[in-house]
Length: 309
Figure (cartoon, rainbow, N blue to C red):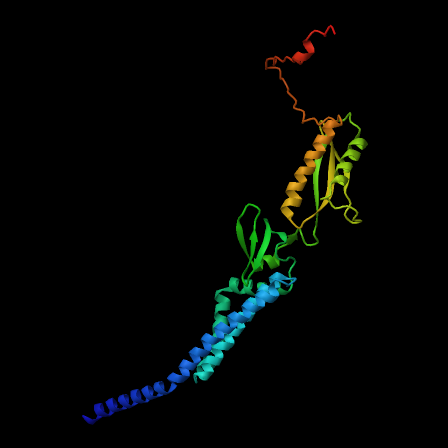
């Protein structure tokens, strides 16, 4: 009976000795595997940096170039890890890792459906999307300039300085309005003149201002600038002004230039003697209310006696 514990103890010692010898023998291979991982990651980083420096700046599609840079780096790192496991004599572990990763991907796919949807949507958007970097777009009710496309989200910069990260699944499924896709955008505003004013003369004057502005697009057959009567309001005849601008810088084209045109139109109409009346306010007095005393004073300059000269 006393021989049994001694036998078990001897087997344990023998097993530990075998594992120790095996570990000592594979230490050089493990060191080689670690070396391969370090060198592989450095090479992947160098290749990615070279790609970014040489091709990213010259790429017509910057979003696609950045997406491919991320994909190239990830693929190179995965290949490096598999080679390192093979060099370390852990090919069985590599096979097990791939098998486990496949099973984990299925489990995680159900657990993190939103992340999976955004990732797949990012891949689709990398190859087929309705916008490019620095385009001004609207997704849902979010308006801004495209700064980056990543695997899970699209980065927009709003005009008031906010950074908004929209999940790619929303970008793929919601309507996307692109204000700068073809480089042209139509601005518009309304100006009201008096009923006694000459409508055609006012329209001609406004068009002269638009045609004299070099920042407004001219001579495009499908992008005509024009003025049209749009409404007979309570105290004004409203004219709607349409003009096309280049949207290389959307903020300047849609905000600053529009304001300058409105200012020039207002000043030109006033100088030409057109009335720009405000809305009329009607006051009503009912039977149980007292009269409102109202007195209209003349301009004091009109009350001065005429000059004897």
